[in-house]
Image 1 (tube, rainbow, N blue to C red):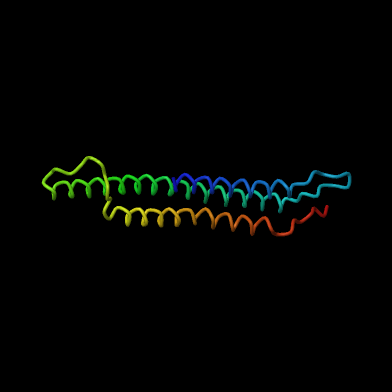
Image 2: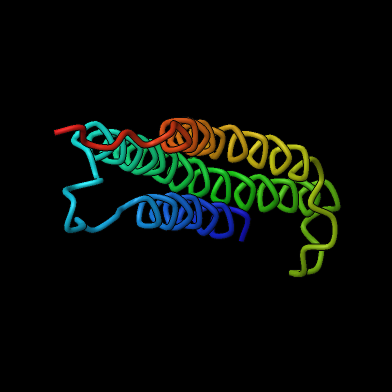
Amino acid sequence: LVAIIMAGVLGIYGLIVSIIIASGITEPTEYGNTYSQFTGWAHLAAGLCCGLTCLAAGGATGVAGEIGIKATGLRAELNHASQSRAMGGTASKEVGDEGDAGKLYIGSVTILSFSGAIGLYGFIIALIITSQSSYSCEY
């Protein structure tokens, strides 16, 4: 569930950057074009910066989320099996105590937060690029 929420946050980053870029685009007037080539390239750079870092962060989140959930579940199952063996094989089929699987889950969530930070850094750089004052054409 944590990986799904973090992937949604990465999509929100792209949505915010696209709204900022779209608000900076102006149509030509009768006096000339006010959307300069510099502003166009800056908007392209901001979009690529946010998009590619969120793509990398999404891939890292997917891999880390899948492996983390599998490892946590396997660890809880192994802890349950070892408790069952220690009790002579008479333990119930229900998993009551997961043992130290919670520690593995905490580590997995930490890795997920660091992978999401990649997208956040790209989002911040995109905001810095788009916050520059737009330059109008002078010819």
